[in-house]
Image 1 (spheres, helix red, strand yellow):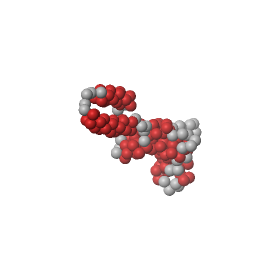
Image 2: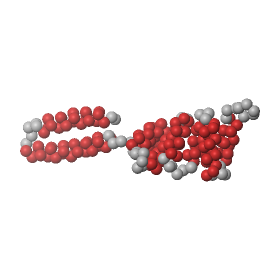
Image 3: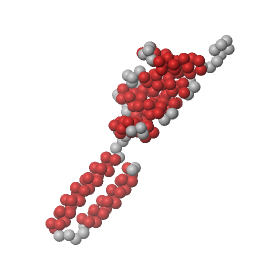
Image 4: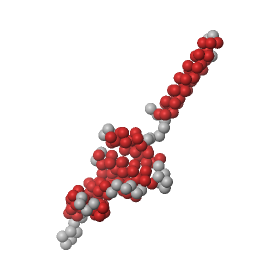
Length: 181
């Protein structure tokens, strides 16, 4: 629920409370009612403001684990945009990597390639970002860039059959030039 709707509801709620407080009750009953209403109001305010908080990484991770990749990528995007480029480079790289995984699961290869590229640019330590970026670039028909990503990944993991296969496909699928290539 958007924050402005919650704020409108709270305003109406507080107006009703104010009317109740001004009603004619006996002294003791009025104090008891005030105490109960104060506790209820505090609880409502805490719950309402808690719902207006920004996106959380833990929420995005839970969405990802449940297979809610579309919602997860939206939440990861919000978290990513809140992180500072200089001070939170590694966190930003990790979130970009997770966004890449979401985009990959959703079949959005152009966005996946971009997200994995961002993860690498921000120093994400998992080298599989290179492999996944190569696969996403290949799906987009960007064979030369995919080939470079696969070659870079093979320097880190020379025994990777996935990277070897991806490299072979990228090499054979590239633009054909006169003279056999």
